[in-house]
Structure formats: structure tokens, C-alpha cells
Length: 127
View 1 (cartoon, rainbow, N blue to C red):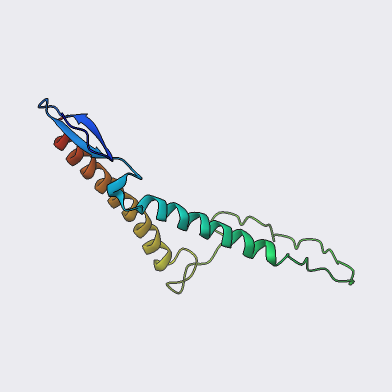
View 2 (view 1 turned 90 degrees about the horizontal axis):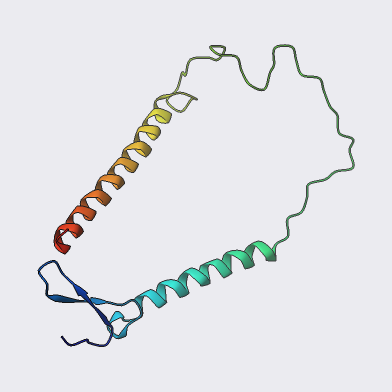
């Protein structure tokens, strides 16, 4: 068994050895290092942009008036006290339903792809 630079020997179910590449090794072309450098640079730029412009509190010299809530004007509406959606973009309308179905569908697709790739990788390793 020979070990090449930038690889780790791994036993396969059939008993033969297979070389697995090591991140940051000679044959890796520095892809991992470039990705890490890009993430660090993006983080530094984001922090610098937030720190460079201090948030100015919106304050005025005008007195703040507090009003009593209107009768029946609670923050949380009572069940069945709202109005039916008239437009697709209204609260509870078709666009909100389609968005929910799209998000749930996307999560299901991601889960199925991960499960398929996991099965494929296990089959290749002989498990």
C-alpha cells in the first residue's frame, strides 16, 4: 500500500484500500482556503459597514402623547373578527398559501435529496 501526498488511506468493504483526499492537501487547489478567505472577508466587510455608520436614534423634542386604547381595539384580534381576503396578497390570501406550500415543498425536496445522496454514498462504501 502506498500513501500519496494529500490522501488518507481508507478501508473499503472488499478489503482494498482507497485514497480519500484531504482538505487543503496538494491536489486540493486551495478551494477550501479560498472559500474560507471569502467568508472571512465578507464577514469583515459586513461588520465594518455596520460599525462605520452609527445608528442615530430618532428622537424629537416634542412631547410623547399616549392615548388610551379604543374599546374593542385589542392588539390581538378575537377569533373570527377579521375580514375575508379580497385580494391574493391580503392576509390569508392565495399568495400567502402558495408561499407556505413552496417553503414546505422546498424543505421536503432538500430532505429527499439528502436522503438519496446518503443512500448512494453508503452503497458506494458498502454499508
